[in-house]
Amino acid sequence: MKVLLLSSPIVQLDFDRIARLPNLGLASLAAHVDDLCTVHVADIHGLKGYRDYVEKLVPGYDLVGLTAMSFQYQEALALASIAKEAGAETVFGGYHPTLAAEEIGKSPEANLIDYIVRGEGEATFRELVQAKLDGRGLQDVLGLSYHREGSGREMVHNPPRPLLKVEEIRRPNRDCRLITKGFYSFDVPIDSVETSRGCTQGCKFCSINLMYGRRFRRFSLERVIEDIQDAEAHGAGSIFFPDDNITLDPRRLERLCQAIIDAGLTHLRYKTQASASGIASSKRLVDKMGEAGFDGVFLGVESINKRNLEFLGKGNMSNDAEKAVQYLHDNNIIVSTGLIGGNPDDNEEDLWENFHLARRLKADFPIFYISTPYPKTQMRGELEEMGLVTSSDFTRYDGLHANLKTKHLSAEEVQYITWQMNARYYDWQWLRYNKVKKIYPKWFAREMKRLAPFYARRKLDLALGRRTPRDFFQEDLASGELCKGVI
Image (cartoon, rainbow, N blue to C red; front, side, top):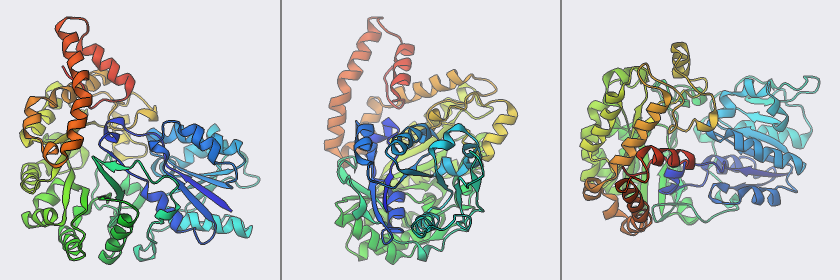
């Protein structure tokens, strides 16, 4: 049997200019079947002509796997159609297929999907491959949805699979990757290494609990160090830790930093996502992160508004934001902040509060997210009950498009105000204080050279009255790049 695993080609363009990572989950799946079959991973999200590439690649493969978040799902269906035309079976996995498996199973697109691996995929995918090799039925494969003979067009859904024991999860197989170039963070080749899975917090907008439950499972530090070394051996100069909440256990993160130091791996550059409360809990932790080689943290701040924090299920996280950012900046660590607007009671002033918070924090890359009613989340149910969800076009469910209105603002107003915040943030003041220009001067200079003519043209068009901010807004909305602009 030959198996091909494809990453989603659909990315958020603004983020892709800063970082493009190979898919860690697919390399992990590959590691769990490489003794059973020939398996390859194709990270196609860096290719311009990815459909042509897939059309040439898929002939000869028996099973093609695709992973998708909600905004990536439609294109995954298009790739599945290519695979089916080439004679392969298809298997879907990831957040959207997992959470929407029942709806997908009843829909016309179920004809393009032979199997859905729901939730944590390694063991389920291995059992699917093994059963196909053995010619056995699939009724005992936990976590699998499939077309059973006699069931008609609809899929049947086996019971869910219990969470795996982390000590039984194999390290990713990076040798299976067909595309090994074009992945970077700023100027440095990058790869991902996970140190834990899951989160115990109950954020209403998040899908993690629906995938993993409210559990936090830790890989051994020895495994993490071995995986970092393997990533470096495959060309990585930077490592991203994609853990769902790496700062749930700050002392463990500090021990990880010490393990990196002891292993002589401080020449690599490390990045992660973290909670403001976890980072603010210990200056010693952040100092150790700086010593280990961390130079970037995405900080979940979410909002300064207490009402919104309560709605999002975030408690008092913004109380820790200033301390967390100060600790990180003191260690020359670039800070990206996630700030969420467009919540039920937000008016225009409430949205701009997040802008002023980012400015006060001197955030290097604030991301002004728009509250998004992801399928099956608690927040979606509440927003639907309020009548605030305005769109179920999942191609726009990327956190940057407005798919809801508030009690005071239309969806278009939420979108436009959020665009204005991005357009106004990256100004001369930001140029003075951001740490990116110091840490990655070549990348920064190249981006400024690329954007300067763009900004100059817009400024000139405004000055001459040839165009308006609304014109620029519509242009960026059409291009899909919503985190830039100038007004």
